[in-house]
Length: 160
Image 1 (cartoon, rainbow, N blue to C red):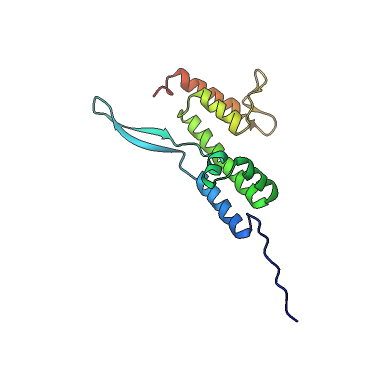
Image 2: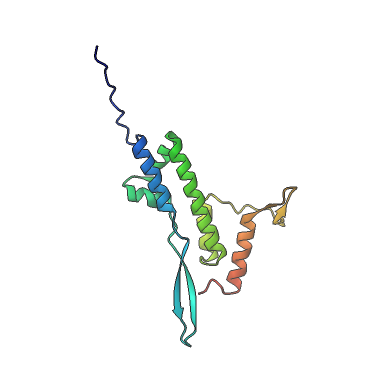
């Protein structure tokens, strides 16, 4: 009696392809947050200028794969590995946006816009909300970020 072999599913994301897809997504997001450029002033003083690299997004990665960002989100709903990779990518995007913002590489309105739209941040903060509050001394990073950016903008740090 011959053993009948089952045909493999012809799903786009079989295990091997899914692993490569996740690796590609993580690789796309795993970039340096900024680059350093050595410059010289008119007076001959050398200095280093920090330039923010382009912020990686799910939409940008989808474009490199020839699919829509909605397709990636549907894969994340269906495949736990894709969801995990996507969450790690959002963590990398958050880290890059936060650190570049704190270093004054974005003007405050652009950074706040990106945080609200890409990372689903909200600026619904009660007046006089302390930065450190509660028994656990939780830090409201949104408040800290907005205060640092306002301070940098008022000092002219963002006008480089």
